Each structure stands twice: as C-alpha cells, then as structure tokens.
Length: 442
Ligand code: FES
Ligand SMILES: [Fe+2]
Image (cartoon, rainbow, N blue to C red; front, side, top):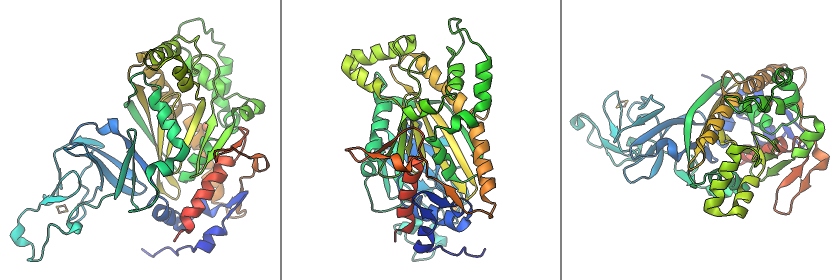
C-alpha cells in the first residue's frame, strides 16, 4: 500500500478559518490518518463505564480510534486497557464484546497474558531462542499507558504524558457528577442493552450535530408531523406515559424557542446545550408522578435544596470531545468511533439510577429506543443527513463549509466558557479550535 502524503502543520492550518473549514477535513484519508495519530492516539478517550466490567476477571472489548482494545479488571480490581493483539504473531485474543476469564490466552499458539497484559507463559520454551526474554515488554500485550476513571467513567490515553483526565474534562465533570447525583443511592449502572449503528460519513459530522438545535425542525420534520397529526389525550394512560409522543413533538420548536435554550462552549472542544422540556413527562416537573417520586427519594437522602440543585441542572446534549456525548437528564450516553474517513460507528446506551423508581429506568430505555435505535424516528434522520453531507462534500466544485452562525454574538462567561443563544455554530468552532491544536502539535 502506498503511504499517504503527510499533511504538514501549514497544510492543516490552511484548511481551518474562524468561520469556515475546508471540505478535505471530511474526505481526505491522509487527514483522517493524522487525526487517528494525533487526536485519537493522544487525547483521553472514553472507553467504558465501570459497571460494564464490575467484577475481577471481567473483560470488555471496545475501540480507541482504530485500535481494538480490551478493558479488563484484574484480581485486585485495577483497570487496564490492552491492545487486542497477541504479542506473538498478532492474532486477536478476544472476539466477544464481553467476557470473563482469569487471564488472556491466545487461541493461536497459546501464549498467556495476565489481565494487565503481562505475558505469563509461552508454550514450549525450548523452541524459543536463547535470548528470548519474557521480561522484554515487547513480549507482553501493548497497553494504553494512562487509564483513569472519573467516578466510574473510564477513559484511556495512548499518550504517556499530557493533561490529567480531570484537566481534560474541565467543566464537563459537572455532567458526569450530575448523572450520578440523580441516583438516590449515588450510584449508576449501565443497563438495558446497547445500540450500535454505522453510518457512511465522517466522525465529526455526529459531533457537529450534537448541539445543533435548529436542524431538528427540518431534519426531523416527518416525526414532528406524525406526532402533530396524532391528537393524544394525555389523560388516557399509555404504556410509555406518552413519552414518545412528547419527545417527537418537542422537535417542532421554532427559532425563538431554540434560541432560548442556549449553547455553551468550554475549553477542550467540549460543549452543551440547555434543556428542552420545561413541563411534563420528560421534565423534572413535580406534577409528573415518576419525577416527583425521584425527587422525594433524592431529597430524603440529600435534603430538599440539594434535590432542587441536582434536578435543576437543565442541560440536554453534553459533548465531551472527541468521542462521547452525555445526557444526564435522561441517563443516555453515546460513544462515537471513527472507522474510516467516511465511516463512523455510534454506540448508544443508557443507565439505571440506583435507588430510583423502576419507571425512571423504563423511561431511560424508552428514550434510548426513541433516539438511538435503528428503528428510531430521530437518529435515522440524522444519519441520513450525515450521509447526504458526506456525499455533498465529495463534490469538489466548492471547497468551504460555513460555520459562521452566531459568531458575532458569543459572550465569554466569567469562568472561561463561551455562551450563545441556542442557534449558533459556537460548539463546532470550539471543536475545530481544539482539533487544530492537536493536529498541528509536534
Ligand atoms: S499469535 Fe498468539 S500465540 Fe501465536
Ligand atoms: Fe437530530
């Protein structure tokens, strides 16, 4: 295979301007290769929630960028992330998404590794040359040198040094805290299955859409119209407490309502949007019996004021650049994994708030189905748009993509964030600021 020409820092800087970016950022395999090396090969990436591999010996298979990795918990409870590639001749050691074993044994020639990746035995040692040294790190599984958990959310980095995880997360720790604080027992677990979809488009298209409010009324018009035609009587009981109907209808916001939700950008390429639902089944409205019960259980443990504070954090999508999006209100999380310059995998999951009414968890599962399943009336619309955008960008008659919405009306907050009305490309500009720093760093 011929090596792709390596873009220089000058080449890359020329493709990003304050209010626009060049289409090559979405279509050029050489740029993609560099993103995998400089962004996904260096920064902190979300890999798993600790509840997904809770017991010693639990193994979870996932990806860090293009790398196939195993997240393991050893006998002492320590967490490791090792490459799913035997140190002998390269066979993948594990093909299951989740497994449980005391060690990792390669199915090819039986080399065995501890759960931290250290080689422990090699069959028929006499056949190995005299200088064969088990202590040579090259005989063990390659590993992510840095693995840290922020309150159960596990991140790993292929870089030996750099920002700590909390420095990387910055103010976005607030959203992980809020998701956990919503549990009356102060504990959450990933439950209710997961969805995984692959779209034919660049990974950045997902993130650019995460906090793009205005698209909803256009891209999701068909589900809004279907919900509008269906004149529900909310007094009549429904299996999902009418949640799906309410959710579909909420995309009918006009510009004034979207603008009111607000958008915030934070250092690190992170961003979030304000909440959408003020009343009803998708809000923390006390009139909703499930929300009222959840509130009462939090208040019983933490007091009324703290319950108000926790449930009052009104944010919808929270993008933790570059690979995870969180919604604490509805206990949702999405991981975005680049597969190729024009191919991306989205893995979506939800969480159970321990100590919360079971109905709260059922709603989280319902919302996961509504927004992230292959039968969703929402994500499929977004995927259609990602693929259309990717298709449009392969057209080389025009080179630049506009990111100027709201550029003149961003306001710095006194704690280092940028704030704007809900209809703004502020989050995308913030993502490209960070992107450019990683992509041009030595
Ligand atoms: S490739 Fe794994 S033991 Fe040979
Ligand atoms: Fe959407």
